[in-house]
Length: 123
Image (cartoon, rainbow, N blue to C red; front, side):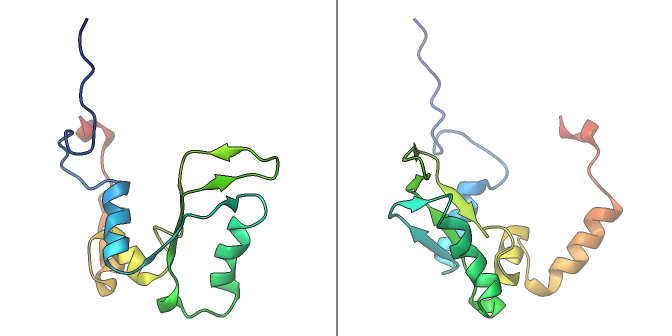
């Protein structure tokens, strides 16, 4: 019987960062709030995050949220963490994901839109 390949993060070589790398970068930059207590996705998660944008918090003080203990109103538990505002919660988060300084984001987007990737080049 053949053994299963080791697909752990340390065993799989890749040439690009993934979401786990991005979450680690957010954590190191102090831009991530991790919530391990039980959160109801139907009644608590979205209001908490929306409060950042509607509650008068300055953009530079906004953070990404990583919810790790998700339930719903019917009592079901979900084993997949949820990242909210992890890509564009504020300019610093956005630039971290783009791998550049905040001042460079606009020019990077212009360059990307002017020469989009060709699907044929993905292989």
